[in-house]
Length: 436
Image (cartoon, rainbow, N blue to C red; front, side, top):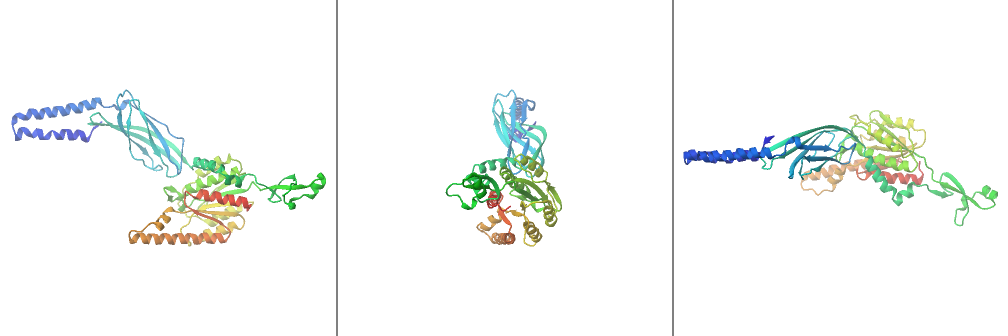
């Protein structure tokens, strides 16, 4: 318990009265004594009437898991036991550096108590800690302040945002375009996987006619095919130094993981097999492609284990290792980033080499600040210089992407909020064209 500024001002207001005996009349000392006594009584009454710390109850509903790139509420139940009047409380939560600091929250509690929600916004994957909850309130006169520290010391796992993956996937599976792209598509005379024989109907392609089956059944029979399934999809994550840099407050690698898991979920729903590959200065992870929707949980756990590296990415080592591990033609999605054409030279060379045997989708996360600098209306000469620099960086990126496109690589250069949709559209296009 400590005095407030209002308490100090109360006693400071009595100083002019204390000077009256010396300036006006010595008999006025009783007036100063009365003012001082009244101030002491007011402070004493405020101390007695204030809510004691031992009667403030606190319960916290800790979430089991936090998801990178998302915001989760932390409900804190405050119960002022025996309180019959409303109480204004200021609350702040001690969070470790993995979580974004939150401002103090001021709320008015009814006599029965209430719930205060504090936002938990993780910055990086790992194990975050909620250290303690601090409460502060004053007496009815505002002369004394009470402070309560409630230790928590709870650890929370920060993992890739699987909830956003499922929500986005549920929206997509209801879309007609998605159903057309991933459901079992049957063809008469086309496709690559034989399905069944079917009696000929007017309008069907005569080239699909099976004359041996027609002779056996003594009626016209055609072959029915379906688009091949059970393709291999490899999500290749660059975990090097550049991918650890934040993009709109979230590291690039975490945004890449979230987008990759969404593609994995849809691929598994479509009947394909999905595996993970991660590399920087060395190979960090490789999981064999596996099918079934239940595989998503395994992919999420393995992706959550990927560490933030300070090393430069060795594309020659990483992608050549991947080539040796893949025993059949696969769809390889390389999620990485680059700065300029010079440093990207080895990257381009090795991605092109990978594309000679596999279908490669190259995904780069574009910084929205570049577009903002380019389109912003300049107010001074420095803004013009920034716009020119942003324009040069965008041209350099386009130069690298154009080299990859000419070599048969599918390229995606999109902002974080658009990269998932771009990857899914490219995946559907490749599936429809049966390029794998």
